[in-house]
Length: 424
Image (cartoon, rainbow, N blue to C red; front, top):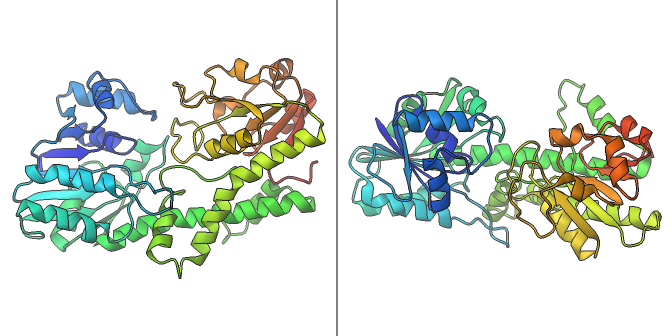
């Protein structure tokens, strides 16, 4: 297994390609996005990830990494493409299907195909294997197949690729063992072997657990708004119990995993996925809850023609990933309410929304409410006094509890924190 062909050069495929290349394997990366491919060929990034740029340069300079829009023959094919949901919340498998079909002409006896994308259970068995059989190779003896889902978080991808444990689910024992041996090129964490469908289920379980936990935190936040409690303080104190680990509330749930994967289980078995479905509805309702909170404050303060400065577009702190970001839904609801707004995110360098500004001061200028939706480090250290000189009304709505409240109050701001009625 000396050469790897990676299909998909996004937030997982590109770092994975770079890791294998910098550990001595030949890697050919493939992406249908020609502009992204050209950037990578020029040693430039089309995504943001800590440590990626220097590792990409090293991989290309070594001669171990090449990229193009078409696959090549290899010993191993890794599929790392998106697996989003449709508007009706059903799984959209078109990218996985297209990627699988794209490698069929290049498959040879003894090859290994690995699916890294997070997918509904039985995707390998029911979707990939029928396509791979078109190669004419016998599955399990001439062509080996497995699922090894990524388990990393944006911003810490390289650290977690190396040190996190990994799940490998093969269609048979030989497929699992071949996959384990391949990832040992850089994985220092423990590698657990199982079957493909169980591996698919494990990854979906992990993200669904987090979604349910966040939904619980968001319910607690909404309750706390009515009973004189600071939910952030209450959760922190509750988490001192040795068997309690409650996540934190926020304006919703985003990203390519937590906001998507639970729907896979709801689609597979809606009759039994009751808690999962309700949690998804709870978290999906938070952007509207936040928008209504902003509108209510405007009405209570009798602000005519209010302007909202929205800070944060990515779904989590210190990254440029806007996939399924709740910020986008908050902006949608505020726009429907006919509220004027300007949005800014220091990590997003190109304009993606008509309401977006690439300048922080322009966003804050003459704003009536500063609405924090993402806890970027740049926002945590925002100068409250300088901000006070820019805005029209000194009101902050902090949905991430990331601002130093006393400093902002000292600068004259009325500070509203999601889930905190104790300090009102």
